[in-house]
Image (tube, rainbow over all chains, first blue to last red):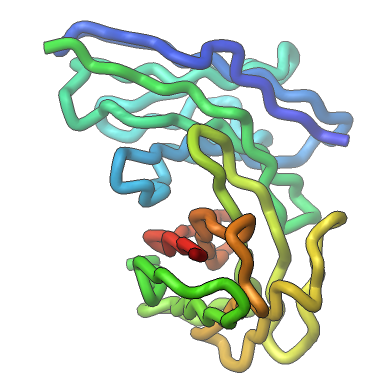
Length: 114
Length: 113
């Protein structure tokens, strides 16, 4: 069975600095999708970024980028120029190519220090 | 695009009553919707997969007679918590799928007294 591991329960970063959130996953499949979702205090789940496993190029969305290492089964999220509004719980998630279900990690709570 | 709404956002009810939560995809059609439950400071726990026009598929350990799911149209799925008890108090979130991506509703906070 697939698993998603986020080894950092909490992290803090100074405003305007860069932070990297770690995520590893375990799967025997070759085709799948990976996601980072953000859950701010409002508890609304927001899609941050998405990566298709067949794409070698790392996904980027403005200040958010990923480092996707397929062989190492690693999918880290880098947030550049951190802003106060980035404070949230971040969930790494995995979706198989053949199943609609998403498997979530336990989350990393990110604090932004002014 | 990809907006999912939930109603109500907050509900308080007495023990023994039933509560219905609606999940709507506002600007797209969703043949598949998902229902999650989230306890404080924890990740999302998938309860069931809701398929338009067919019975929902429940995850192991989720009581299907307790949590009734109906996906009557391509834009609406409902979750009914029947005979609610205090242990059913939680945050319930739905999602709908476009392609490989799930988009989430804002959630419903249920408090059973």
